[in-house]
Each structure stands twice: as structure tokens, then as C-alpha cells.
Image 1 (cartoon, rainbow, N blue to C red):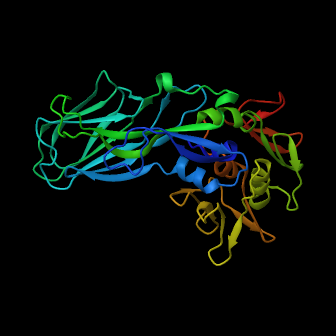
Image 2 (cartoon, rainbow, N blue to C red):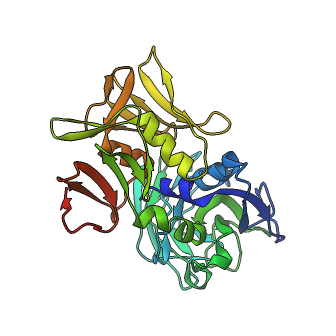
Length: 364
């Protein structure tokens, strides 16, 4: 599930490393980063970089490790969901027959549910999660050509390290790195070294302590748009460019609604317009693109990475860009399995929230 709501909810975070032993290949000396919120809300870029930059690429022992981590979890969830670990041989035979690779996430445990795919080469392998919560990858037969493996569908169990959402913990988030275990005492270990090798500093990010508390008004109240204008958690924002209905779809002015949501959460993010490309966009501090919407292609691009089609075509009307209310929620909130849309025929308003608030509302 996307976590853009955390951007609105979290406030701004500053990092402070804890003093712990170093790792080989480590750019810092911390297997667990403690992130402290800056109540002045002045360093959005640093917070965004920590929470969203979960990819890493490292080489060791003739292998290239590309990782894509994950953040979360949601409310009562007990696990984090990193996306993938891709292992590529620089030359065939780097993955030695009869040997094992051991992966662990500092302080946490891999769940036994995961999958490993052979993307290239003809190596034969097996895998399991041992009693220590480490992932063991066993090479049963070496490949004749360079091998590429992808570990996916991972779940990382937090156990006793799961932070409860209390007001005492709202100032902290935690990051747990992925390391390659090089302990020679591990049976058939492919590598033997004094220090484990850091593969990904932000492989599993536990951000729920502040998300669960600060996000509650955003998650459980509502955004509403229609003839009455736009409201966020009950606060009304007048619109100089009114909403309108097109073929039964409520269209909202992107710039005014987006800036209202940002202002409500203490941020001053704006919407810009590229007339030549007919593209609207919003950037954060440092020029990083938060999202862009192409009118001609009817697409939205998030964080300069993922491009998706709009559910309904955008429209330029009287010099103002309109998008559907559903597409606006996709941009502002992201995918939320608990979220629901409602239509109030009497008031001619569409609303989005987690729980039905009006017995007369019709679930869209």
C-alpha cells in the first residue's frame, strides 16, 4: 500500500545515528537508525529521502546485490514488506555449488513466506528461513552462465521491536538494514569475514509510531468536494474555480484542492504548470518531483518513477486544470484498502473516508 498519507501526517524528520558496531561496506556505523522529528517542519527533503529512498546496490564476492526495501506497517500490522533482493553473478561460478548465502535484517526476522525466482542462468538452488529468522539461500548446482536471482514476496516480522502508537513514541521512526552474514560458524557459508556486509541501510522502515497517531485525523475523517466547495476533516476551503460534473464524474480543480490539503497539514507545496508540455506538477524542497499530471497523455507520475493512467481524462477549463475526485484521492492519499467513496445526492457532494459518516450517503 502506498504511504503518501505519511508525508502529510508525519511532519518533518531529522536523523540521529545510534552508536553501534560498524559493518563492512557500511557508509555509516548504525544497524538501526533512530529518526527524530523536527517540530519546526523545516527539513522535508531529509525526511522524504529517508522514508522513500529504500533502494541500494552493492557488490561483494563477485556478486551484485540490488535491493528495494519497504516501509510501514499499517496500524495493527506486525510485519514490514520489503519488495525485492536481486542477486547477479558478475561471472558464472560466483555462486558456489554446495555453499549458502545468509541474509538477515538487523533486530528483525524474515517470515517463512517468500519466493525466489531464477531470472537468468541455469543454477539450481533451494531456500528456507532458519530458526534465527535468517534467509538461507543454498546453491545446489552452479550455473554455466551468469545467474540472476530475485527474492520477492518477503515479510519481515517486527516481534518485540514493533513500536506501539503512543504519544511518547510519535517522534521516532526506525530503519533496519539488510546485511549479508559472513560468520564462518554458519554451516557452509559462502563467505567468511570478521564483519557482516551491509547491503541496504533502509531495507525495512518502521514508520507507524508517528503515522498511526498523526495520521488518524486524515485516515478516519474525510475529504469532500462538490457544490459546497472543498473540505478537509471538516474545515471548509472556498474554491474560486467550482467543481463540476462531467458524464456523472465529479471534477475538481487540482491546484486549489491540493494546496488546501497541504496547507491543512502545515506544508506550503504548490502546483506548477508547464504550458508547453501541458503538464501540472508539484515539487518538494530541493526540486524533487512529488507528482506530475499530463493532460495530453492522461497519466500521472509519482515521485518521478511510476507512471499510471488517470481513471478519468483530465480537462482544462477556463485556464484551470481539473481532474476527477477519484484521481485526486489517488494523488493525495494513494491506494488505501480501508478507504471508501460516498456520494450524497442531496448535497451533490462526493466524499472519501475510511468509515461511512452519513446514513444517507451512497457507497460509490
